[in-house]
Image (cartoon, rainbow, N blue to C red; front, top):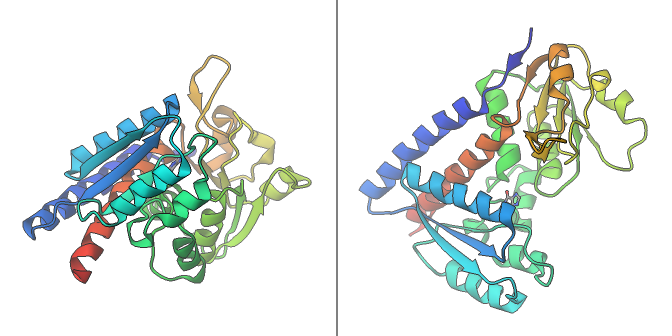
Amino acid sequence: MYTKIDGKAVAAKIKDECALKAEELKARGKEPGLAVIIVGNNPASRVYVNSKERDCKEVGINSYEYALPETTTTDELLELIEKLNNDVRADGILCQLPAPKQIDEKKVLNLISPEKDVDGFHPVNVGRLVTGEKGFVPCTPAGIIEMLKYYSIDADGKNSVIIGRSNIVGKPMAALMLKENATVTVCHSHTKNLADITRNADILIAAVGKTKFVKADMIKDGAVVIDVGMDRDENGKLCGDVDFENVAPKCSYITPVPGGVGPMTRAMLLKNTLTAAKNFMSVK
Ligand code: GUN
């Protein structure tokens, strides 16, 4: 029998804690705020931004949306970020990705003040994560660690295999699992004999972006499987990178899609924003 990890329940607990923290900050005269930048008309980005703003409202964080046209230049976006870096209402700043192709995303992410970088994408925060210093950690991997802890899943000494090496998930996930004392392997599109490696995983984290990519014969008996995918199946139904139906019976724990990692990513953004607001209070 496997346990289906309930990301919604863990996220709800974190959101309750966030609501309390927001109250505390307000009582001390600080209204926590998140600036959300969206450039262009990507429909998926619009959905994500709407839910981030709704989440903020639910826990008592002000959100300020900056919706810029599809034709925005990098310089125009940099100018806005400069302004937000100096705006005391914006404790956190996030620019929803992907931005339209004329935008130099690296320049944009690098200009966001590391102290307001609630996505944890700035090289300073990446460096802090890798060296074990305090800083903002990208929301998806941070949320996965919270879920593991909630279910008392100990990664110490375990083989953890991550499929995917993105800056948003794979690489920070590897750093976090190392911090948990796991033995970490990162697989990607050039990896040879992938299934031989994943079959050795006590904790398998799939961040591939391919529908039902992880099959039952790639899984060790009793493994913990975390599915970061947000894909669509042949009927347009939301599903993950893991063939849940066939993989789940081999697992000890597994996250569903939807209702697994997704709600945690959203909750961690709120948590990071409140940390930014609290840090602002203590340096003011
Ligand atoms: N696009 C997909 N995921 C993310 C995320 O976590 N943050 C931002 N800013 N954009 C994204």
